[in-house]
Length: 317
Image (cartoon, rainbow, N blue to C red; front, top):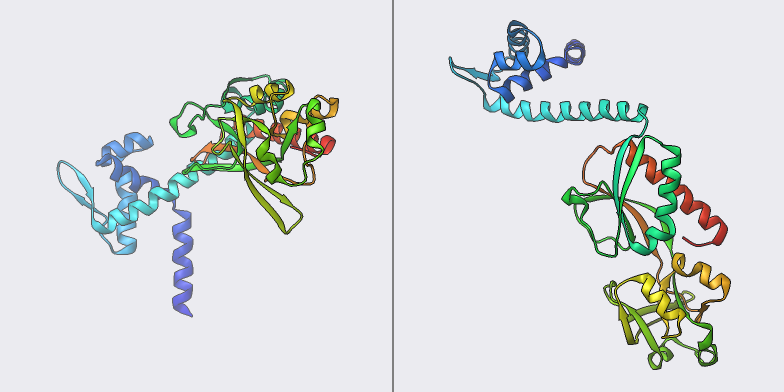
């Protein structure tokens, strides 16, 4: 029992003197007690004394000292690696507290697909800048994929299925895929009973998709059908595909957020609505860092609010 009490007392002492970790880490990183003291803004004597107390307390040599340089021993190097991790986490914790208390500010650089950007991201940008007048937004709306790890953007809105390694992502919504056609196609659509019947009809393909000519349909829990379609037109932008379908060029599969207004207005009609296509996710994708600026978090909150409100109104997105 006495041993346990001693350990408890020693532990309390370690917790009360965590600043020694910063002193020791600074010495290892600078290779000098003098340089460490200058970095920390304290005297060399204080740094030397605190590191010496660590060594005495644990009966372990942490540093080797010469007239020219100070270096970590094997035990000291292992201890330093733990110290560096603890100190980095502590800095992140303080940064996050400071950022949480701060108003979002600065220029937010983001990217989103052109179609979803116009339908949802631009309205969210307008709302975001109204709420946070200290913020500006530089948005790149394109069907071309931009890498968040390249450092050009702080946030990417991805629509579909994520395939990126080494990123952090948060799903903020979903969307449905809808098979549609112009109203002029209705006489020919009346005879469609199964997805396999689509092979005889012309399609407008979205070349930005991985497999624009093959689609998987389901009906209920037990009916599945994977079909290949015949593309008469191939376009590399979703909005261009929608316009071609509106003009009667053929059928196509489009996201619900792209065709919702056209379906409501009768400019497009659903095809075989009893058969459904896989739903996809809407994700906020961030560079793989532990810390996110307040402006990034604030924008994602605004966009997610608008997605939820739209889903409540339309049952989509």
